[in-house]
Amino acid sequence: MRRRSSLDAETFGSTSSDRLDPAEPESLRRLLREYGIEAKQGRGQHWLCNPALADDIVASALPARSFLEIGPGLGPISSRLVGLGPVVAVEVDPELAQVVRRTAPGAEVVVGDALEVDLRTLLAPLPLPRAVVSNLPYNLTTRLLERFCAVSDAFDFAVVMMQREAGSRLFAKPGQSARGYLAALLDITFTVRGTTRVGRSNFVPQPTVDSVVYALAVELPPTPDIQTLLKAAFLHPRRTLLSNLVTGGVPRADALDAVNETGLSPTARAHQVSRSDWLQLAGRLHTRMS
Image (cartoon, rainbow, N blue to C red):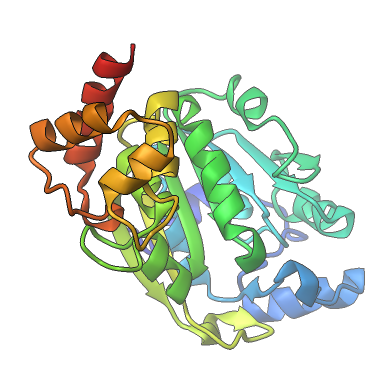
């Protein structure tokens, strides 16, 4: 990943003296004082205060040429992205949106809830390749990732930061008991290009847990067949895949034949199934059920 020195000329070289880097601790404190902003714990607000880390996050979004950032906060990432291409930033907090307009001039700042705004419409006019970037609030991590999967045909890369514990669960490998519906969906939709562990000391106020950044590339936007299959397969995690498929409405004979033809054991559970096996199983069930 590129370090701060290689991003400075592109991102900060032509800015005015009033332009502040919100990832720099002193500038961060100044912005918080000037705008009278305090972190809202209910929204999981913790301000990134490490310029080198901000540079690394931006570098991991390349080679994208345009960017949709969800939850820019004070703009430590947006302020760097604007030097690399068009940026749309969606911020639910109007106070923070006002700050981003200052720290990331040139970015289109949309005040709204990322769970409600039309992400596909925001992405459509941006030049290819596109990246979605987000420091995911803990209480919205699952719902936002599901939204990203749903519109993954509209972008090419994603860079997401989340609590480390959540990352271990949501990116669990086949065979790991923590692997659930969303982990399987993410595994089908994205390829993990890289990960970066982020210590809690890189934020103000300091959270109680560490975070992790995942750099992703879109592999296969999920079809309705895949999503329906995964939801049925993980309906009851303690039951076998075959049992869940039957409970989900697949005739037992069709379910058993599809499982056997995929090379899976009838006693296999959903968390044990690999990406390639999910795709095969979905195709075989589609053929039998259509």
